[in-house]
Length: 124
Length: 212
Image 1 (cartoon, rainbow over the protein chains, first blue to last red):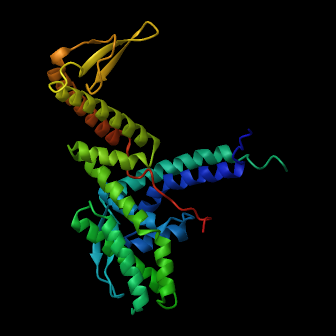
Image 2 (cartoon, rainbow over the protein chains, first blue to last red):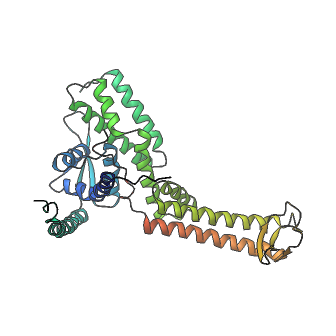
Image 3 (cartoon, rainbow over the protein chains, first blue to last red):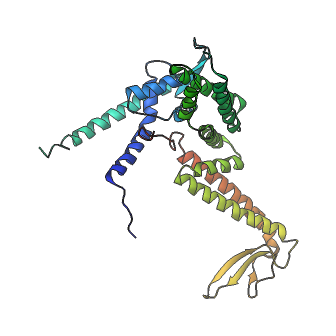
């Protein structure tokens, strides 16, 4: 019996899923950095400003988790659309957490970029 | 925004299942979630040209099934509550949920189930001793390979031919104390593993950009 090994592409995709999962918390916190947003706006920001396409059914429980952790706070606001919207904003621990995560991310990404610089160049 | 009867029915049906599946959460939390999802559906559906049943359908489809959505909230809530509670039942329930999400959760569940099973067996044995005084108890049995093995017997079958009962009536107090100790230990081990290894942001389900 031969066992089919996952292709490089499949492995790369799995790795990407883990990366996305790992960065989702930072992405959501970062989306709220500039002010309060409701759930659908958070989703749009993630889609427009990053390549993070997140399942809609994931964002709401995630926001609820972040609230449970005390990183964000929420409030219902009446809107012109005729129905209220639940707005979220960063708490001060949330801002600290976002800053800290961003700092780690940048440092990590910068050091990795140096290492990655020669990749893909050897053929020319 | 006006909405067609058909679309309204679809939304109501979705929210009804969601609400039902959110049982276990406090009324206030559940209502809040349903209200938020309702608000999302209305916003999402209104993004299209007009709020046809089609746009409502696609808004609902994008959210995933109400069961799946509710399950994410319920799991979070359950594990969060179990972390601060002193209820073995709540911890065990949480472990069942957690087990479906991660290997660590599965291991914690298996240890717990095993612990409670052994504890239950000892308690049962102790309680059955007065009813089966000759056969219930902890037995030492000769093994074919010249070793011994222990057997906890509830006493429903005849006594093993060459076995020796070890504790006699002591199985009643010792069995009960051991069972209680083991229940406590298993409970605290489960609680500890949840506190130590469960993180609300792991075990997320993400749909990928390319599986449309």
